[in-house]
Length: 97
Image 1 (spheres, one colour):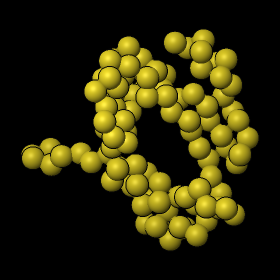
Image 2 (cartoon, one colour; image 1 turned 45 degrees about the vertical axis):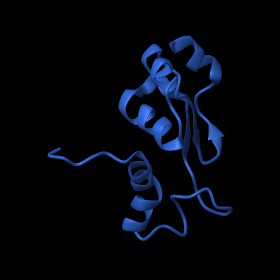
Image 3 (spheres, one colour; image 1 turned 180 degrees about the vertical axis):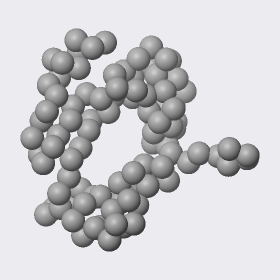
């Protein structure tokens, strides 16, 4: 990436409100504000051995998001909500580990 460092806070912003603003939909999506639409995932930053090990040295939210961003995969998804309705049970998540 030629000297460009990845900022996890900027990355997660880009995935949420940043994309909503790019589409001129920020009044409707991209936030957790009351009255907005949201499809969500609940992430587990300690879902794998590598993630648990790296989390031992985490000192900030930015560090934790970096772990999820770089080491996370589908096993880090604990639950998925579509229009407020759960679509993946915790039992399913436990069976995948």
